[in-house]
Length: 254
Image (cartoon, rainbow, N blue to C red):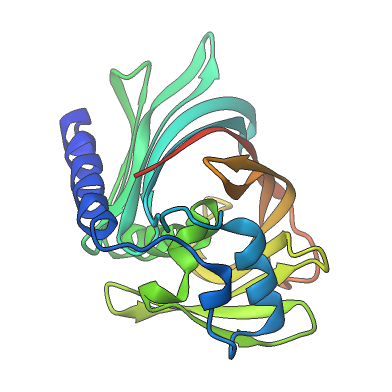
């Protein structure tokens, strides 16, 4: 998948954003459905800025470190529409160990394309396994664009614990439940879902994918997780080995 193909995915996601923006009313906390679970309501009221447009697409800038055998720093930009897909472009590593490339998902197709110094192919992956994995990555990242989980976009919420809320919405017709753990202050603490993947380099399989939220920051009024850790595990209440630590530098809602 070439750089130009990645740019085409970004353009497609942003074009969809313009269509939705034209039909979006400002967020009014009092207009939220009274049937929403209390924790979901508390989070949406904290995360979304009253009187501002409810955006479901964003361009993000982030940095962190990724475990690829060893810990390597990364810087990345991402265009994300949690209802359609994403394109994540990054530079990983430094000096003699540097990878440039992107992961993406759109219209049912997932791709992973990485090159040493942007020149020598290191990993070019596609097919059903990558598409399934990247589709659920799209879902897990929805919390980076809080407006994407407003009920107006066909998102449903169901209380499954005192501060746990199950969230469902379709991506290309597939609905995979995702659980948000929300603190008494209305801030998001954890995201959990079943995701298809091969984090240890073995065969693809379904495991728990967990995002632990460390802190939040407001961008254009919306409260976005700006520090997090990701791990795969066989038990969502038992932490696995962390594979990525990240933080947000900038968010531009489309």
